[in-house]
Image 1 (cartoon, one colour):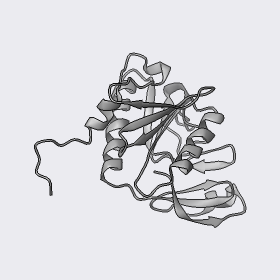
Image 2: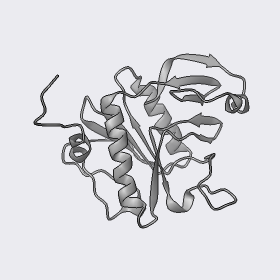
Image 3: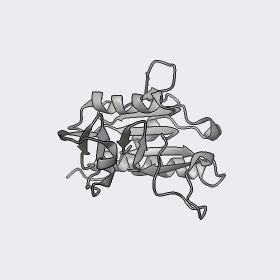
Length: 194
């Protein structure tokens, strides 16, 4: 998910961060507030399954952690990726050694899932902003097209489809995922269509 149609000018990031949280979440980009769209079925399913799969691969060995709808504030913007993945050593901690509430760093891996009413270019701009500011990997998932565009630093975006193996964070090098694996989570074959 990403930005919705309506936006409001706000003078500073600090003022935005003092506002109450909205549902769905709002993001602060280039001096404006954009409210994200409410997730629908395909979006929600992909977000849930992909974050669960990443956590099953990354958490037991303390390699990586996937968090959904987490506010990340850095480089003058405050965004809420559909999935933000952090390498274990980069997870911010509080003074008690617990996960911090505020994340003021870019995710190591950002995953955005296109919703039907979204602007693809706004979602892509959010991913490229992250890549330019330290993110190592980005996915732009298009369920209608059954494709995943992969973003990496100093490389052109690459569209992956079907049995293409997707790159993952290097700390997860023993884990493999294909585009087909991702979109198979949407299939409920054998069920009646309503």
